Length: 172
Image (cartoon, rainbow, N blue to C red):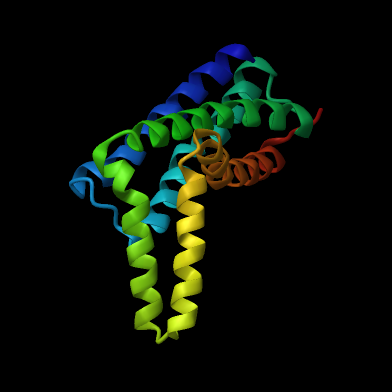
């Protein structure tokens, strides 16, 4: 199991690392908040496809084509943890760059601009601004950033692992 988990975990992590950097490189460090979430979650799904491939490889090559849901889930979650770790590391490294350090301020400005476009009142804008400033201050703590970053990818990896395990489980 260790060989399959390591192999597919590293492949998934590599894909995650590359896909996380592409939008940053092509936008000259300027985040695209309009499409950022779509691109981010699509990247996660692409990278985490290695969970399915890893479970299938382990089942077919090491388990004689038989695997329980529990064992499949174990293999899948270990593979996805590699990708999750790389995702967090890449994000933390990005936030040490000048572009990354300015990202939260840019997101706050974008968010307020979106509210203004939608016709928010002055009091709503001020409440939102206060909320964003509070979050921005909290986000400066590396442990908080790690936690929020894990909350982005961990649910996706759990869902993909669960679905892959259900599809690939095969008894005697």
